[in-house]
Image (cartoon, rainbow over all chains, first blue to last red):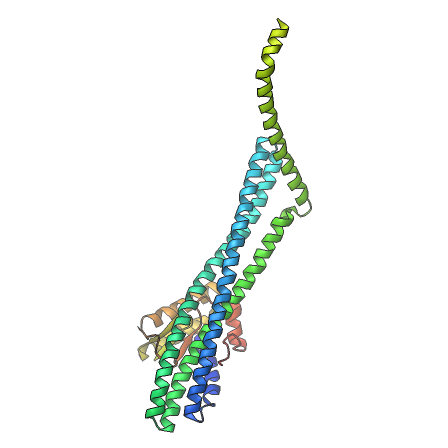
Length: 244
Length: 93
């Protein structure tokens, strides 16, 4: 029986022992390790940039969905004014379904934001460690015997390797989360553009049409009322004059 | 001993805390066996809290850790990946 901490430690150690096997010529190993670290740092920077871009895109999509929610709200109000409670009810049900999706996305977005902060801190730490390694490698080359250098290199390289594995996992998890969110956002997008929200698949288009009819009807009523008012004043005088 | 909390950093801890860590570590495994996501989170949080009570090592520390606590927001699925084949932890370059 082993818990997650001891298992994770054992896995990391198994991976590090492979890394130590490479240490044969200390000078070469040091330079090679340093080059590898710089390459990894670039990968980490790219990984973080990808996550940040994906997060921004998701935020834009969320604000578009927010507009859709407002629109459904307006439509419900118009339907109610037109005495069509049935349509208002449907518009509000749609709004509720959409809202649930948006809330789910929003929660994931916050988790992603936390992960992003940790990633950025992890990248900065990696940069500091690589810098420390760079100065230590010159000291090791100059001051230690080959055997002592092996030990020092092993310790420094595995320490950095452990941190790289840590940041590597963080990037992988953040990327998985953005992919999951992109899939959800695409599903929400599909719902709003097709007008076919979960419970209204069969009548989605019809609801849209009816709601827009209500909206048009209320516009027509408004214009009609304005015209009547205008004509009423314009026609009242002649009709009075004609009648009497 | 030096312990890492993944995603957070490394701490130097009194060796006397090893027993407490082992207890909480065993709880993470029981939570996974029960399929208890909240229990797993609680056990990992408790582990990390003990670790954070130690002395935080500076960013330029180059040594490895004696123990590694996985990310505290680990899902059950990810925990099973660690238990089954260790695939969750990326290979080193």
